Amino acid sequence: MLARNVLIFHAGALGDFVLSWPLGLALGRLHPQSRVIYVTQRHKGDLAERVLRLEAMDVELGWHHLFGDPEDLPEICRRKLQGAHAIYTFVAGSGDRWLDAVGAIAPEARIVPVDVLPPHDFTSHASQRLLDRLAEHAATRAAVGQILASIAAGGIGAHAGRLEWPGDHPSRRRIARKMLANRILSAPSPDAGRPSAGNANSFSARSSWNAGPLISFAA
Image (cartoon, rainbow, N blue to C red; front, side, top):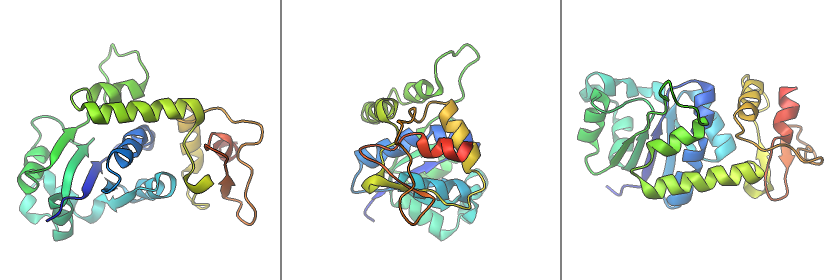
């Protein structure tokens, strides 16, 4: 089987999920011919698809069997693992049974546990903790660093000059506040975030999309 999948497992809170986005964007840049897939709760997967233009798979499809008996893992999940050449996980750490189960199903894949829970004496920004955990993976770390630098300079780049948010998503205001508070997006320019014609939830952008639309959602 041709390995084309890059899987990112995430089961944390919404704010932690947003802080993983630079990794998702970086992996998309590093592996343009691969399918970068978030395995997470459905509402977070919807955001990854809408905002980052990455793929997503619902964690409720039976992935929990990796913590128990992997023989019960549904075939659709097993195929996703077997088709992966890289797997990044925020749900398991060194020595966890999950890692053994995944390694047995996808022995050729590179498995990277990303434990971003900082120690008590950690005083840097949460994004630095992500970089620290990727220290042994130079290419990925460098790509994440470039994405973070780009976000700091101009916000999240809009695909084809437009970024659409699901208008009925119940979490968008909380997401907006969290992203602004954690400096995931830059401050708005005076003309940022003007709604495009015909769609109040679609915003035009010039070269990058910044915090303008989020500020209007969070108000």
